[in-house]
Length: 229
Length: 283
Picture 1 (cartoon, rainbow over the protein chains, first blue to last red):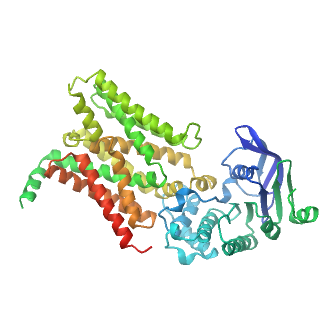
Picture 2 (picture 1 turned 60 degrees about the horizontal axis):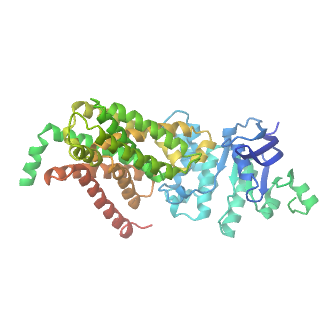
Picture 3 (picture 1 turned 120 degrees about the vertical axis):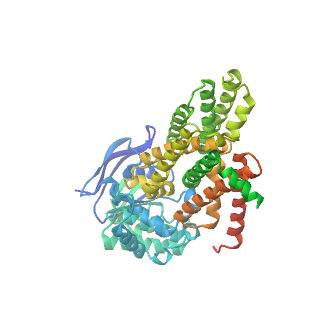
C-alpha cells in the first residue's frame, strides 16, 4: 500500500473548488514535485495533505505505517519568525515536541536527536546563534532540521528555495536530495522550479487549470519534453 | 538616611507590604505572558481585553457586587477565548473588530457609571479615574484580594514552566506545530484564559488603561539585549519585577500614582536597554 494516496481529490476555499480530479500515489522514498502556477491550489492541496485544511471532495488516504501527523513540514517563513529571539538549538529542539507526550521537558534522547539533525544539515556550529542573524539559506536549514526531528518518514516542503541566492538554492537542494537517498525519507516539494524538478524528482504532480496530471519524471520528460501540460 | 527611615516606616504597614507582594506577582505574570503576546504580535488583544475588563468592572460597580472579580474575570476570559479563536478565520477584520470592542466597552462602562452611580460612592469621576489608572486601589487590598492574587499567580507561573516548550512552539510556528500533531488549539485556549486572568489581576495595580505597559515593556526591553527565547523570558520576568518594586516604592516615597510611576520606570528601563543593545551588544 502507498504511503499517501489521493483519490479524486478536489481542494478549494469555502466550497468553491480551485482544483479538482487530483489523483496521486506516493510510496516510501519517493521524491514528488507538486508543480503549478500561483493560485492553482497547490498550497491548499499541501495543507490538506498535512491535515491543516479539509478536502472539498475525494479523499486522501494514509498507509504503510504513515500517520498524517508523521509528515514533517517546512512552512514558508512568516513575518513573526524573521525577528524572533531564539537560538538555532531552541528551534531545532522544538521539532522533538511531538515525541515527549505529556512530559513537560525534553530528555536525553530528544537532545541527541536534535544534535543529529543539526549535524545532518551542517548547522552544528550555528547551534548557539540567534535565528534572525542567520542568512536565508541557513534559516531554511534550521527549519529543515526541526522538521527532521519531528519525523523521519516523510517531509513536505513549501517552496523552500524562494528568496535564496543560486548557491544557497543548490546547497539546500543537495541536502534534501541526500536526506531522500540516505534515509529513504519521502519528499514532497511544492514548487514552480521545473528545472529542479527534472533533476531531482521521481514523480511529478502538475496542478493545472484544465487538468491535473500525475506521472513519473521520465513520462513527464518523454511526453512533453519537460514542459507543463 | 531620612529616605530610608521613611521607607522602613511605610514597610511596617501591612497594607504597603500587601501592595508590594501583589504588585511583584502581577508584574511577574504580566511580563512572562508578555513574551508570547508580543512575539506573536497580539499586543492589541491585550489592550482590547483590558478595556473589556473595564466595561465589566463598571457593570459590577453598578450592580454593587461585593466581589467584583466574580463578574469581571469570567467576562474577560470569555472575550479572550473568542478573540484568540477568531484570529484564525478572519471573517471580520481582526484589528478593526478589537478596536470596536475595546472602545465600545469603554464607552458603555462610562455611560453606565454615570446613569447609575453606585451606592458606595457618589463620586463618579473618582471611580472612573481609579479603574482607568489604578491610583490608590492597590493600597486598599483586602486579604481575599491578596490570597486570590497569590493563588492565581502561582497557577500562571506553573503553567508557564510546565508548558514552556509548547508555548515556544505555538508562538514560533503554529502551522508547523499543528501539522506535526501538537494540540495548538488546546494550548491557545489555555493561553487566552491565562492572559485574561493576568489582565484582570493587573487592573488592580495599574488600572485598565496602563495594563499594556506591564505586558509589553519588559519583553521589548529584554529583546534589545538577549538573543535566545529562554533568556528573553527570564530577563523579561526580572525586568518586570524590578520595575514594579522600584516603581511602587518610588510612588510611596514621592506620593505619585502607583500605576503611572511603575509604567514610567518601565519606560526608563526600556530606554536604557535600547542604548545598551545599540552600543554594547555585538550582533
